[in-house]
Length: 141
Image 1: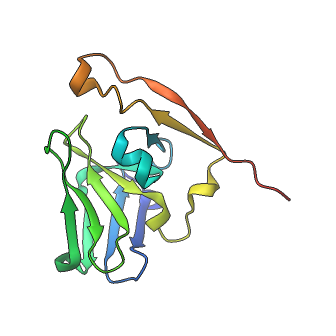
Image 2 (image 1 turned 90 degrees about the vertical axis):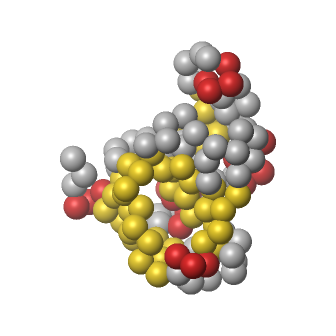
């Protein structure tokens, strides 16, 4: 069950796309991935159930990109280019949502972010998901 605290609003950089998201596990499931696309995109994400992302404005401006297996959509604003969310390949019943798009949240709010091994994705290897490392942020005072 999602609490009211786990319902967040967000937007792309230019504000043309606005959305509401019900986080499946709050910020407990924050993560990054080291696959070729995520490595270049650099986003920190959290999880929402597939029906947990509600586009409030600008749905017609969202576009998507598919790569590798072509099985999931990665959504971004066609005006500013900012990635908002994607359907997770490892569990198509979930979305990953870019925390930098959430109102009042920054990727730098998390001192440690687990990095999943997307280079050796479980759907490709048949093995269990593996942690590739930990991304750490230590602010200077």
